[in-house]
Length: 115
Image (spheres, rainbow, N blue to C red):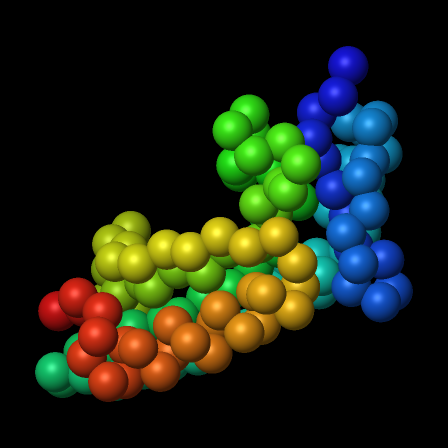
């Protein structure tokens, strides 16, 4: 059975993991690989966090089997972390880093709807 789970190697390349127990152990032992970048933005008197993470599982499945979406950028309110306003998902570490930077620029320029 395939769980569509992944880890990152030392070069930040995505590597499939077929064994669910191995995947759980990998994620527990490599939490530093989950966090790609956080950026705090102040706008309209409020603070927002642009957060980009490695998800470890395919959040595009089953629609996107050939190109798993396993990285995500979201914008959260620092006052209420349960509120998020924008989200993008990516296939690679490089795409996630670039997407994070683009989301920060868009938020700072007012191109995203954050309160």
